[in-house]
Length: 125
Image (cartoon, rainbow, N blue to C red; front, side, top):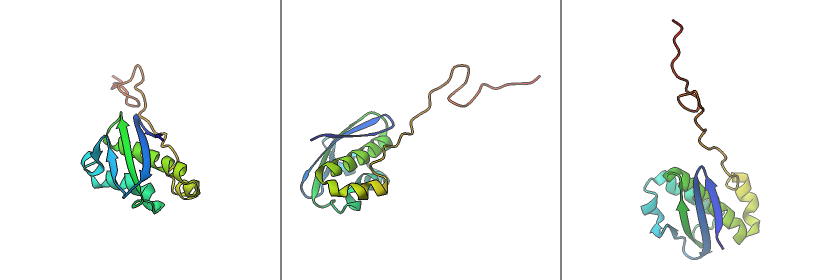
């Protein structure tokens, strides 16, 4: 069963199955796809919090956004998939904040301005 996790523009489709704790992202090991250690720990957080890191294999397809957004989407998807696997894990994941979708997205550029907030330079005289 594919579970979807989202963050910014990134979407992750996650499938959990019994195994040895291997995480595969887009056909590559997670360590190869996410070279930064901070992103690897971000993805593993829900599995570590529920003590299921060594019992489940994770196969994921991520698309859209940047590397950090994809890691966040994968974390969200893994947390949602853990709830489908075992409903008893839901309170732990909810308390840690893994089930809450991070709603922060890039603000659009406004007309008559240089960016989302930045204005064009104004001179009084």
